[in-house]
Length: 185
Image (tube, rainbow, N blue to C red; front, top):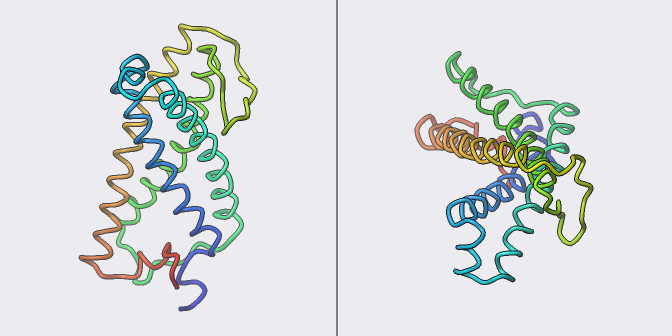
């Protein structure tokens, strides 16, 4: 494989790490969103509920860190050309979905961080408590959590488009788009 046929290995690894973290974060966020705090405690107990919240916050901080590294590698290294080239419609859709995903995956953890801090809850990364960066304001927290949830649904929609595009290129067009991000050369 020619070196310009795929992204550099660290960028590909970051892609898949972010993908895993986002899927776990969405799963935990949807669970907490649907059940709420009290029903989650009733269903799985206090210890597992706290673990679920801590894990969700940790995944958010991790996504923010990994996305920062992704942006650095994306800017610092050559982006491989599409071979064969994408048509105009595919370029616009692909570029739009990718840029919106990058933006959403930076904004989402920041919204969660601000919502958590303004709600008076600890901002956690594993067992470390991070600075809140914003004072406690309950009404602001409610608004931020609402936007955090809405953006979560938006990310889910973007992921569906992203995966559908990947499957389209892999199974229908049978071009080289999938190998650009493959971990296996």
